[in-house]
Length: 332
Image (cartoon, rainbow, N blue to C red; front, side, top):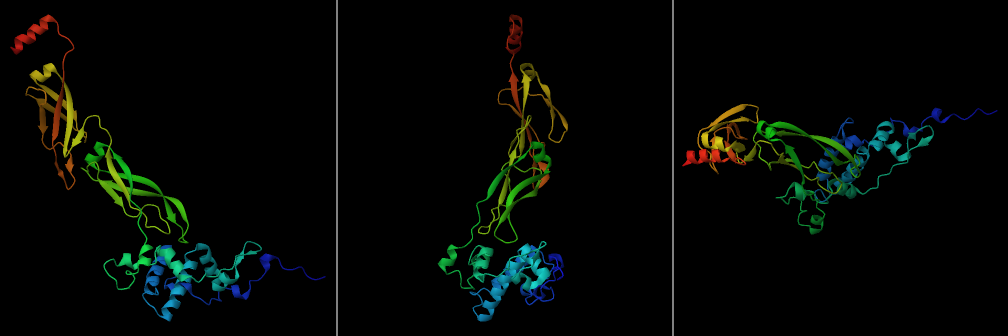
């Protein structure tokens, strides 16, 4: 009887799939090491594609290099194609490589449209206009059809950054978690990923201060990511409000204290206890100013605004005749 056929796992690889049979060195084409990461691959393609773009180097040699660079980028920027190429070489891409126990991957053939790769990468046919806005050395900026395809940046995305008055007074570090779309290795599809942004709030920052993270918005093949802008907002505070560089506190005092003097006890934003004697007669609209107890100046934190005391005079609900007479006698 004839011997049974070998099982799929025992089947020898065709000679055209052996790693030694490599006829195209895609890493050499992009002038990168085999250990290059995705950023390195994209950076290399960007440099070479701009160098050998037909509008910049209109000769046959450059056109061929432009094609080879595009093909190398398409393969190496795709993690699955790159893995096949690394193990089985270029022939493994063309003929299919073993996959699972019995299967083979689909053969890969470069579509041959290097300009399509270029457009998808830059999301524009004329990136030179953005890279060299004040120059026209490549002769592309004068082409209105190319200008219309120029990639535009999305509008900035604004979010509130809520801080307490204590945090604005002392300074603090805020960690903000955002979710955004990120381009995959193939340069076309996106996935949602989280990112932690760190914001150093400096002492004295005013409400409305804007903190910008350039191009941290959603990524896409045809857009420049928007800037992400955090706008500082103060949480309501039980004791203080801010006016310019000054802090304002409104103290409630009895009519007797308003007429005869009192001491205002107050806890500052950094936890100190102040005892502030009021010797003047408190009348409607009266304010008391304490120097250097306000908000710190951002550029000179040792320099501070003032603390302004305002007063809410509490009148008695009623007076008997005897007390009315005494008040009248005291005031007349």
